Amino acid sequence: MKRFLVLAATHVAMLAVGFALGIYALPILIAPPAPSTAEVAAQAAAASFKGRFRRDLKDSDALHWGEGEVTVGPRSIALMGRLAPGPDYKLYLSPEFVETEVDFNRLKPQMQRVGDVKTFENFLVELPAGVDPARYTSVIVWCETFSQFITAAKYR
Image 1 (cartoon, helix red, strand yellow):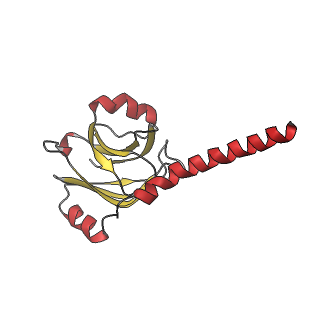
Image 2: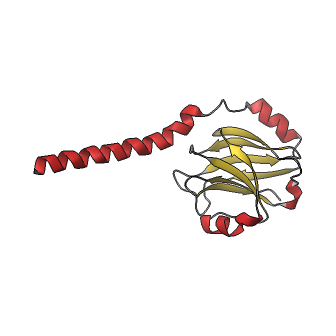
Image 3: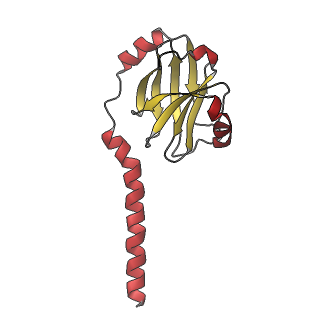
């Protein structure tokens, strides 16, 4: 009986590890090709605002981070940099800079959801029609599935 319990426990533990690795690896495996440096640079040239994703934000950690220059233009938001891979990333514009899940959830009703982030090295996300980035100050990457703060940048 003891042997059965040990085998069951080790198999359940390995199943949990495999599931966690699958959650981490699947977004990487299904991600579309990242925009090239030239594509991001072209969008950045037309940008009105610039900010920076940093790894040292309060709720960023080894699995949830972003780094690089973010540019906000009249039609799109671009990142020249990297994000920690993960599922279901969404890009938001916020009226205030936030760096914690608590602050994100407090301000979420005042934020504008821009779109999905599907690549982890460089990204380009089109702004929805009628969205004026000058009405906001910050851009935030948020994981909807796990309600997890990834990163943020103040651009004005």
